[in-house]
Every structure is written in structure tokens, then in C-alpha cells.
Length: 99
Image 1 (cartoon, rainbow, N blue to C red):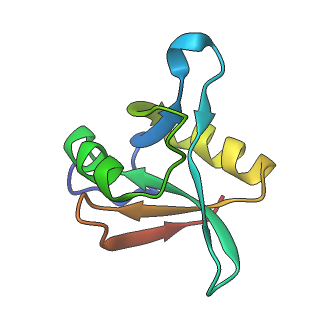
Image 2: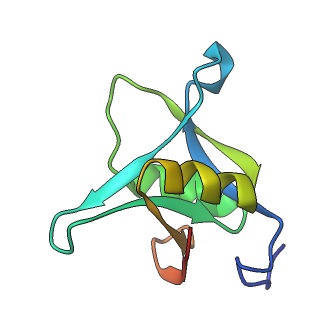
């Protein structure tokens, strides 16, 4: 997966809430300056683990990195009106992905 553009990747890493309880939900973010909702996706597990430390999330809901097929993430994000952004572990934007 490393070195591929997300549009060509089959798998990406996302942050998922409580997957072990059967209520898995993607962590969405909101940018009030741009008035957009988005789901952050990462190219590697290591990037997702680093990104988890930097992303705003509710304290009461534990999130963990999980690999998902990019097409499944796109469908889920589009259903909720979210865009996708591919970032590295430091939070640098690598690519915007159309849902």
C-alpha cells in the first residue's frame, strides 16, 4: 500500500469507535472554517496510530485503527455526507478523495 495514491489503494486505515461491541462507527471530523465534514483515512497502520493521538475525539468513546477497503469507507462516508482525506501520522494532507 505504501507509495500508492489512495484512489489506487484497495485498503486504508480508519479510526473506528467500539468495533468489539458490534457498533463500529467511523470517526468523523468537522472543520468549522471550511464548513465541511470529513473522515480521515491513513495509508498505514503506523500513521493511523500516530494520527489517533492528534485527532479530536470524544473522551467517552474509545477509537482504534482498523483496516478497511477504500470502497467501503467511501460508501459509508458518502451515506453520512462526509468527505475523505488521506493524511500521514503527522496530520499532513496527502490527498483528498472523492466519496
